[in-house]
Image (cartoon, rainbow, N blue to C red):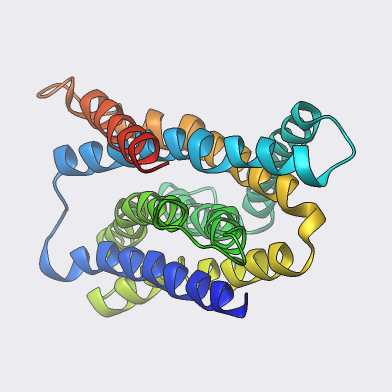
Length: 267
């Protein structure tokens, strides 16, 4: 079962690497294509929504029926709402940090302050994303690992990795526009994803060694992912669509369809 912790580490290192790739766009391009970012954000949100049900909530209900004395629907609901509340609390913490780190009332200070809050918010919400990946790998069957189960965990990592690419760019590009060097902009952008390997290993360890929390952990990860997708990714990808109004929408539909196809076909 320690192998699953290692897999979780490898997977979350992969999601961090995609964050670094996104941050690296500041080195090669002045600004990434808005159309491409909208498509990628939409696709990632569709993948995350589908994965939240088929790869997290559905297994949570099945595990709760076997492991928990509480009704399975209650376990899944409590875990799901807990994940959403955790993300909501994270946003509140960002608001508190904004008041503490407010730099000045000048327009320039406001811009720098918004960048600081962007870095903090992306770093903060990378924690439950790393947990989601770690929980998915930690929840893999101990004795009979099937390709279908492994594919479900990998798909979650892929979905989160895809949406990490524009997040890395969303940090490094504004920093570059504010006068930071390309190297420093890249360094700060990729650093926002370093919390994912740490939280991924923690999530996998908790699930591997405390089996009773597995249904809660799975549904918790689903709640966190749904809130990120609905509150952040979907509104973000729907902006600036004058030229191609359906680009992001088709990305969402395509991401959901691909994830659903893989889970149902392989599951």
